[in-house]
Amino acid sequence: MSRKKAMLMVLTGVVMVSYSGPLVRAALNEGAAPVSVAMIRMAITALFMLPEALRGKASLQNVKMSRASFVQLLCAAACLALHYTFWMTSLGQTSTFASVALVCTQPLFVALLSYFIYKEKISRAALPGAVLAMAGAGIIAAGGIGDGGSSLLGNMTALLGAVFIAGHWMLAKHLRRTLPTAVYALCVYAATALLLLLITPVTGGFALPGYSFFYTLALSVGCTLLGHALFTRALGTLSASVISFALLFEPVGAMVWAVIFFKEIPTAMLIAGGACVLGGLALYLLAEIKQTAPRR
Image 1 (tube, rainbow, N blue to C red):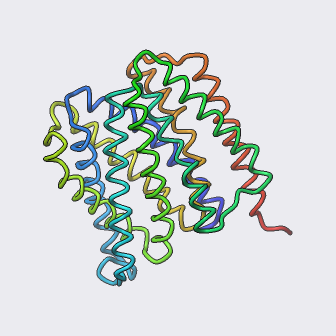
Image 2: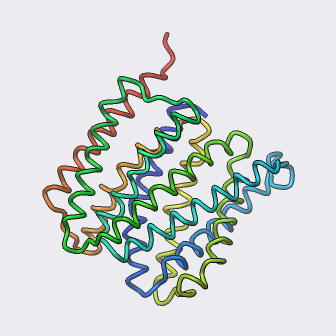
C-alpha cells in the first residue's frame, strides 16, 4: 500500500470515528450499560469481518499463529476491552467534549512507547505541528474540565481509556507485521467481545434497551468497520504515532455532532482548542508526507 493511500485511509477513519462519542452517549441515554454497548459493538464487527477473514490464501485457516503472537493478541484485546470500558463509562460521567478530548491524549503514550520500543522519532519538521496539535487537545480538555457537566471521576476514567488504547495500538502495530489485516481484525474483535462478556456480570449486568441497539449497530458499521479497521490496515504502512496524532481531529468532530444531537454548545476555549488541533494536525501530516516522499 502506498503512503498516500494509507494517509487517505487514516483521514477517512478519523471522520468516521468522530461521531462515536455522541453515539455512545445516545445509547447510554437510552439506559444501555457501557460494557454491553462495547461487547455488542465488537461482536457485530467480528461477524462483519468473518467472510473476508475466510477468503483467499491469507485466510484464517491458512494462517499459523505462534504462541507469542497469540499472547500478544490477547493482550491487545484486553487493552481494547479496557479502553472501551473506561471510555464509555466516562461518557456517562462527564461531557462529550472532555471525554473524547482526554481519550485523544493517547499520542503522548504512543509516542513515548514508539521511541523506546520501535525507535520511531518525530521529525524536526513535524515537531511544531505535533506540539500545536497536542496544545489544542490540552485546551479542549481544559475547556471540558471547566464545563459544569464534567466530573473529576469521569475525566480520570477517560484518561485511563487513553492509556489502554495506546497500549492496544502498540501491540497492533507489532501483530500487523505477521498477521493479515482481516485475520487480525476478526481475532482481536472477537477476543475483545469475549473478554467484555466475561466482565459483564461484575459491571452491572447486560443492558441494551430501546434504541440503544441501533446506536450500537451504527458504532459497529461506521466507527469500527469504516474507522478503526481502516487504521488497522494503515498500520502496515504508517507508524502508530502518525495515526494517533491524526486522531486528534476526533474531538473536533465529536464537538460538531454533540452540538447537533445534544445541543452541547462549545465554549470559546473549546473552539480555540479545535483550531489548534486542526492547524497542528495539518502541519504534522504535511511534514510527515514530505519527509517520506521519494526524491526525484
